[in-house]
Image (cartoon, rainbow, N blue to C red):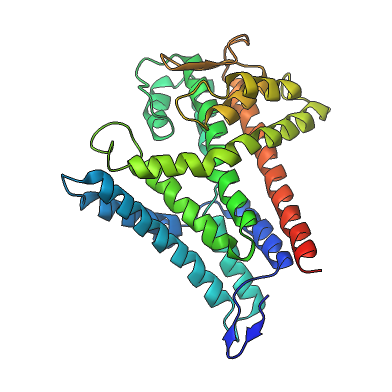
Length: 337
């Protein structure tokens, strides 16, 4: 895993180790889900954000917001670096170091946590427990749920799952793979910005100025992964279309068509791409009332489509993990033959 330089260990892992950490992190996520809050690194980042948010002054809030974001990114990056350093210490058993890195990497993405609530809401909608769904939805979507129809509720869930595939799964592993030996540090730096955006990145008061830098940084960091997501959603749709028992009609090529046509119709520069690709792949219309319509020519969303989007994003996530593990390995072979 590391090379010696005098008396100090080099903490940068090789490509085989990095790929193994990624796959082990995915296995931990799928089998165990989210760790308890007390030992969840992203919760620690969230507590720091909350502390700094509450300490924000009434004036110069935009400048304070920049300093707050940089402080949180530094803390998160230091956390990632510390894990790499500890894992590389002399005398640290290799398996224990591997598990330590995998555990901390797993905390930056959440496949299980993304799909489980969708399945729960699906169950409530199937049983026609609409008021229960109205209570749950505000956690996942930023819209007034009091007057949403059953169709609009289904659409909201599908939009949330497809959008959060980028922010909650694809982007962290993208930065992990992109930065090689520094990948864990990069994944944590991204996660700090992502968490900041979810906590303070709003256009309404009191966060309009305080969260401005965080929101714009999140837009920049998700720009490439959002567009790459269309490729993985296409691959997932192609796979599902080849299954002997198809979960309804699948339109793989329409994922690309819809992404190109509707990807920029949302207020966010990024969320429209995975949502539009999903709408095209499943052949459904996604709508946020008074905001946007994606896949306007397709039939309205049905409750059963929540189950289909869960399958689609689960397969897309699998392709993402396999692809980036392969990229890490191939890049390592070419860089260090």
